[in-house]
Image (cartoon, rainbow, N blue to C red):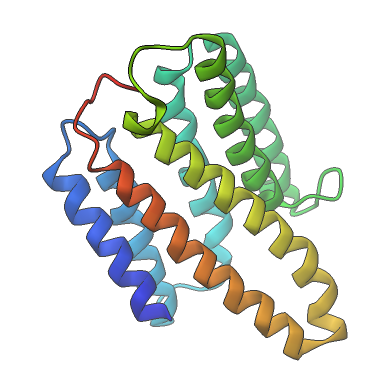
Length: 196
């Protein structure tokens, strides 16, 4: 499963490099993801690097959507709140409202995608939604955010209660992650860079 995951990340990286003028710096996101995943898999880095990388991933998508959403104040407020919450979680290593940094990551991904969809409904254009790159980015964020949030909730309970079921949850999550990157990859083939 890890090989397939890395393969899809490498494909996404190569396509995002090749199409870098029409894709908003996704090559950076995929390069970091590949390096981190390989270094953790080879035990050069420990899993405790994930919270720090998660902050980088969230920052990337906040930055990416800042340009796309017309109401910047929402994104700036959201970013400021996120930075404060992340800082508290990372420094104190405590959960806020029962959520760790990964729970906040899911919520932010879901919120960003929903904000983009709301903008599309409120300000329709002549470009069909399926011809917009950020449709696929938003679907990726929404799908992955929901699956990851469910994984967090279920894994926390079943890790202690039923390890076999926990491993099934983890397997499903890995398949869903690969599928979500495939959705994102589809958006890279949209050639109308102005159709966000």
